[in-house]
Length: 143
Image (cartoon, rainbow, N blue to C red; front, side, top):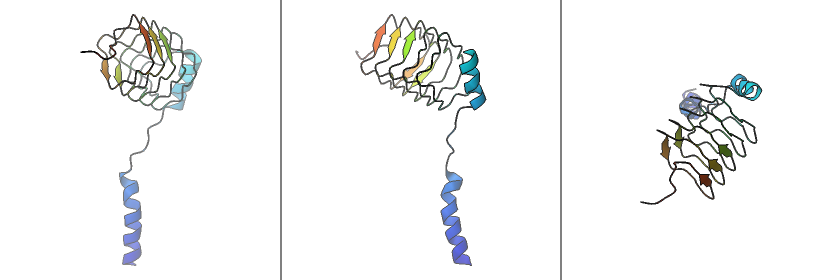
């Protein structure tokens, strides 16, 4: 009896410590896709690949780990949004606002950033492989 209880406890203990993966609120994802507006929404780990979010209102949204490959974010307002570990490979950002945005460990491989505002943005560990930037105050290397 004690041995089976000990085995069960040993098996279940890691499950108690495991952190669940947070997922986007499905209703808020639908709201964004239907209305192009979702300020303050929880879009954590959302699959938004190839979406047309032109002029989207995503102020203060949590896009941590979001999949935004090939997304069109032209004119989108991401002021104060959290994009930690988001994937924006091949994304298109023209005239977008990244002011006060948290851009940590973001993949911007082959993304196009033209005339993007980024005042007060927290920028760390970006993947800027083959990124195309013009009129955007994000530095690529240098001293």
